[in-house]
Length: 196
Ligand SMILES: [Zn+2]
Image 1 (spheres, rainbow, N blue to C red):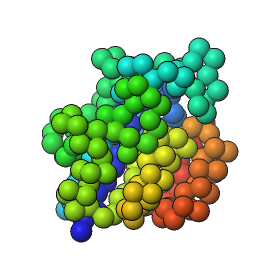
Image 2: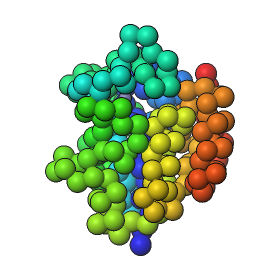
Image 3: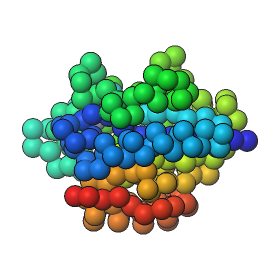
């Protein structure tokens, strides 16, 4: 049984210059590409998730609370929905084995709500590829990384978050997220990156 790396939502709208910018996002994108390069023999697979909204209902708001509602972001076909240029080459070069799209008509913070273009759900894809262990990285620690790691545990995988390769929106929500992850049995390594 193998270990896979899940790269969560390294998209323009979640990096500097995007509609919900997370400080450090662009820099983490560089670090993640470096991790993939160095770890290529260590991971059986590398997959990426992508926020991919058409009409996600209350997930978008003109008066967002930044917990359950957010400014418009990652709309299908927009520049903001594209992978950040620091990360995109890993996808186009084939270093990323599959991309999972989530949130067409829902909030879908977790990558486990995502589907490959052939319709395969993330958990089914991982099981079909004999993956038992997951390392999770990406943006944002206190939102989609957290949700993806928690769902990974619920789906029966052994999950670790590599904090050096994540970026958090805020210190307080990241701290709360790390507590939730620990309680759920998610292993944490490295130091959280929160530049806000
Ligand atoms: Zn979203």
